[in-house]
Image (cartoon, rainbow, N blue to C red):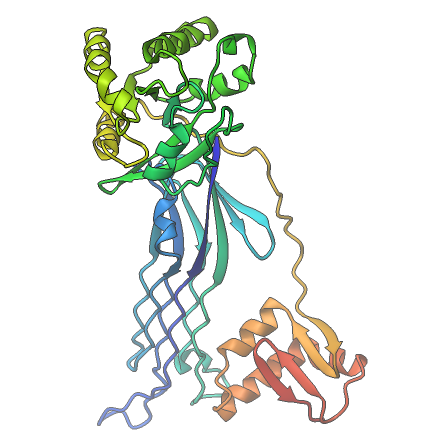
Length: 422
């Protein structure tokens, strides 16, 4: 199996600002406040799409932002909410918050959705601040910023297609030519000791291709790590049987073919029921050209689909991958395995705020107070007074005094800094 991994940035839409407005009509001399609320920002949502198999699309686009809400208007007209942004992912994706390294979602079912960034609430208009002592409020809230996160998407893949064949027949070179995988390639047996996997993109569709390390005689008995290699073959939907048509290792190409299939049969007869495409490799060499007509005729007569290719030059690889894609469309999809490792996110009672002092600055942290500061328009005197009441109401002022704050000290809340005055 292969862990496909992508890192993306998601930003939910900001809430729209609330409006400050007063009813003004000819025959209504004392029209009251009628500023509407801002619209809510759109959420960012991950949704399972069974038509997707890999995370390759996230290699080309990594930043995703939902639509923001619009500001409120007079006549109690609320702003329009932003549209949610739906990001489609393949089944089997685990979603991890990069900052906390916590698993926040496990997407396995068709059309399953997960909100990964919530849109900001729209700011309240001045019509919402009317009370018995404040009949004509001139304050309105700013829209709340939408959540933003860097996320890690992880998907455990089982190879759709397995490259099989003796050592040094060119499997790793094929994989390196048709995908972004960079397997070790060298001219000696068992260069590849573990399966390498790559994502192949053909005509906008993708599949996972595995370079299964070279099998040898006795693999079904575990010789040469045979059992480990054969287990990967069991999970593949199609096999590409790669043959060194030039016989560069001094072996007979046809004997190699029969011997590998014998090992598959001895390990598990059902492996021979898998679709098997034969790739006659190294046709750029003279000996391969000499052997090609006989090998093509013989294997075709036995019912195999045969492609002549050169992994070194790339000849024939596009036609081979295109044919594989066509065959995969008609085969049952593999059930993706999902990591059973979970991180439980405990729900702790939220404290209204927390104070710490760094370099003489009193830093106040807490969702409630940070949210209140973010919603406040500090250019508006009435809005600033309203924020001061909130500070006093939740006990922040007394807590700052208890922490030793003095007049003139700096208080930081989120991205904002204030000078403390008695």
